[in-house]
Amino acid sequence: MSKTAFLTGGTGFVGANLARALLEAGWAVRALARPGSDRRNLADLPLEVVAGDLNDPDLARKIDGAEALFHVAAHYSLFRRDRAALVRSNVAGTRNVLAAARTAGVARSVYTSSVAAIGVRHGGIADESHQSEPGDLIGAYKRSKFYAEREAVQAAGSGQDVVIVNPTTPIGPLDRKPTPTGEIFVRFLNGRMYALVDTGLNFVDVADVARGHLLAYDKGRSGERYILGGENLKLEGLLERVGRLVGRPAPRLRVPLWLPLGVAWVEERVLTRFGRTPTVPFDGVKMSGESMYYDSSKAMQQLGYVPNGIDAAVAAAVEWFTANGYVTTPASRRLTSKRR
Image (cartoon, rainbow, N blue to C red):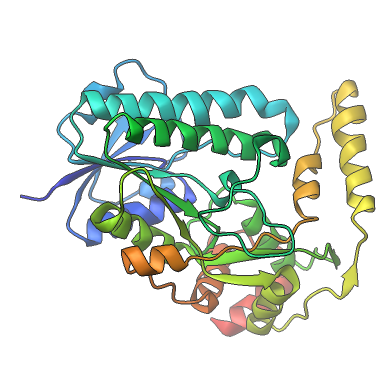
């Protein structure tokens, strides 16, 4: 008889890849999905989809019978207008999900936080021991993830078995929304990226992140967090790898940070007053001024986490975006079709 995992966020990027990893590992999966949500990432998978919301008062009834909770769901937005929604989903939602799991008698929960909650070590590489002050975290999203992680820590401190994982910047298939990194892939593949801000990130194969969740369930220590990362790399370096696959050079032009900051400020602070929807988040641009580098040594030593590098993930992302209609310009379709 297979064990049952209750999964939130299964329709999203990381959650959909985790659903597949759970099924491959022999778990039965019960996935929570909001009514009317896009469920294509779960189509044709042998799992049960349960309609509901993170803040449902009867969530314990829906979780009942599961041995494990994997709480991956989170609202992601870098726009300042979405502050209330971020707190409602990420902070209050996490509190409610963990309380429901406790009521339902779930033996162990894995909470998907983010390196956004850890913050940045300026001029260096951050690990789990680093913590930026909440006021130093850029944007409502990062702060919401910080306070959501506090909910998980407090639950563990009260005796609930909760392990925390902090993925970095995942790459790979099923990035349907897409994420900001996925948007960079799409723009580049369509030949619409002409310049870069000089920034760096830790990129990781989303398949490694999914495996890291299972390792955290098996070997993680309650109340502790584990960074699930891959390679620290400049954005230019990432696009050079994408470019080698499709025969297109990475942009060489560097844009000074003040220029996109000015555009974003005007969009969010001025044009919204006239009913315009902003396209560039001010906080997102501010984040790009920092190199966000991380060290996964703790997960490697305590969990047996071994990231495989990102080359396969880059190729898989290019294939998936192309196959699913994100590459729309004729010239770009010809470039990507040559490698297929």
